[in-house]
Length: 251
Image 1: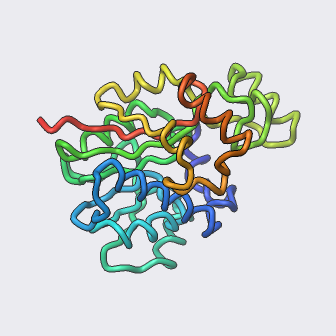
Image 2: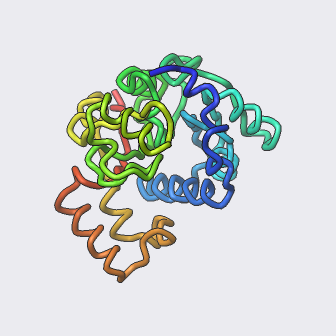
Image 3: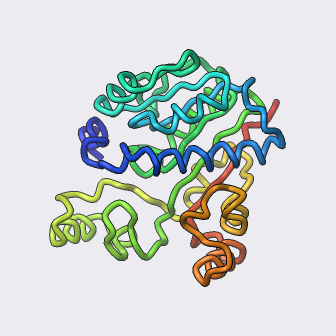
């Protein structure tokens, strides 16, 4: 995977600057963390967002966590974040998720939201997340897996299921670009990537209670879509998007 694809990613994706959409994601992150910790007070915790992009999510999180650092290899995204959001407990740094410029065991919470598929080596990224987390800390992880009908970045059916050469050809045929850079993996491969962590699976909980976790704008309770998604999430977790809390052992 070319790093050039990452260096100006935000310039290729206007939704990354959509305040409403990004704050919705930030609200879900906050609500899941509160539920996991069983407290509304997150102010004693330091947080690192791996893949900060435009900074909108981190600006929201800074109203709830004690110290928030957003990092991204995307220079344009980091420039926008630094020039737009200023809070005493918020900072942005251009940094590489596969080689974090942070000390070992230096942060309480890491956010890795829909990032792993954009990184050349997600195994290395997860090792770095594990390294910088304090013992007993955790990572909020969210992401798609390869087994999905419609690829979310390009809205092309079955794109993620194709072998890489065919996926590149499909992209060109559809006029969506020359290369399919994203590297989604299956549920089982993803679990192997995070084998150093204990997984607390919030995927089905978020789908079952969309209002509680702030996703009712996507899943209206009581609708056919919601009932179907709830069944799939409970009995076929390999087929759903994932929201996991990844726990680093305390000792």
